[in-house]
Image 1 (cartoon, rainbow, N blue to C red):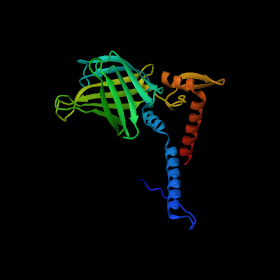
Image 2: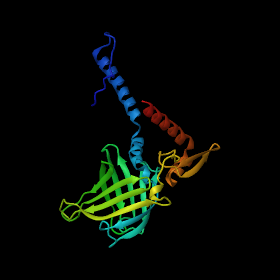
Image 3: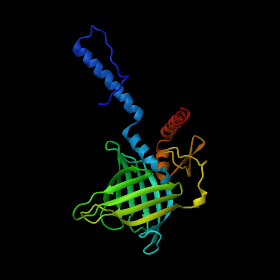
Image 4: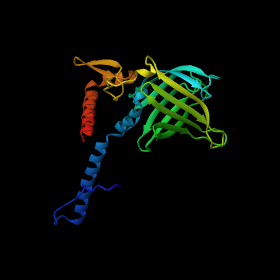
Length: 256
């Protein structure tokens, strides 16, 4: 159990030993609950962890290259990322059209294990599960293999709000050395590489780039995708309350 230096327990000397231990435990439990509340619920923690990838939400054009700087075997695809906030756990979902390596991906965060979990569905074959974490600005996820099945590694690198790179790697069955399968470079639809800039509206649900207008009580707000739009329409008052609280925390952190 972690140390909580401020969680002291002082009781009158007349309190019997067993009763004193009971009250001390009760007070300490209350302190732990409050500490947990500060960190947010597991669902909130998971959404915060996923929000590191807010930049990927939207529509993309991709070019896949098995060999770096070579058009041999290359292909083009289109892709879209959205939030899914309807289930028990929040998720980021990517769907791909005309892709050679994947049809869809679903990314979630395991709060207890403190790692990301990705379920990848290829154009053909069975789904596979990847696990991993951030490493120097890259989200690195690995699916385990065995003597008959290769391990696979997926590295997601957001270069900017308009540029995204996903590297697919694999091993030989029973081996540990990863080799390049292909790299897919994505450019956001409707945005040129020189067009990145600030001053964009913020999604009231996740804090990402707000691109879709929503209305409530005569006011206009913004969300980043269809999933966030649905979440806003289901509970606008709750979403806006969380949004205002998030802004307060951000302002407090900037002022500290």
